[in-house]
Amino acid sequence: MHPRDAEAFEWDDASTRELAAHGIAQWEAEQVFWNGAVWPKNKRGRSGDRKMIGYTDAGRALTIIVVVKSHVRTLRFITGWGCTDSERTRYLSKFPSSEDSDR
Image 1 (cartoon, rainbow, N blue to C red):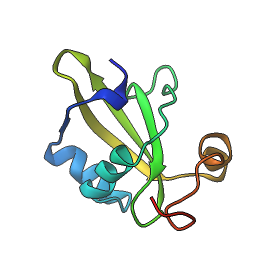
Image 2 (cartoon, rainbow, N blue to C red; image 1 turned 30 degrees about the vertical axis):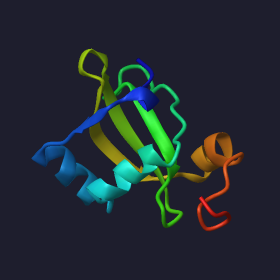
Image 3 (spheres, one colour; image 1 turned 60 degrees about the vertical axis):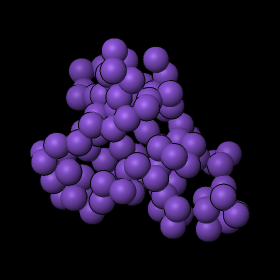
Image 4 (tube, rainbow, N blue to C red; image 1 turned 120 degrees about the vertical axis):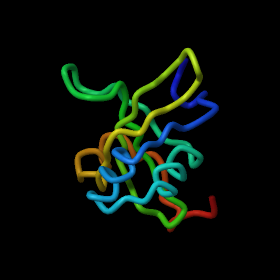
């Protein structure tokens, strides 16, 4: 299953706290999914299967690490951060932020 085809999200206190420690609310991570994220594979040996990189409705560019649970068509959110300059250039340069367009 490609992560964009997930039908549900899995949250627990640990993942919510981890994202909050990086200044990211649960609803912001979900907005990135719904707004058409890009999905590069995460580095070998790191937690999580994929990076979910995209924009919130407010135009905030975020990178969220997810585990893809194909058997239940679910994404489990692990951690995240504001996109780095290199992530913006590599993955988001072809997508306008919501501040630049009417999404």
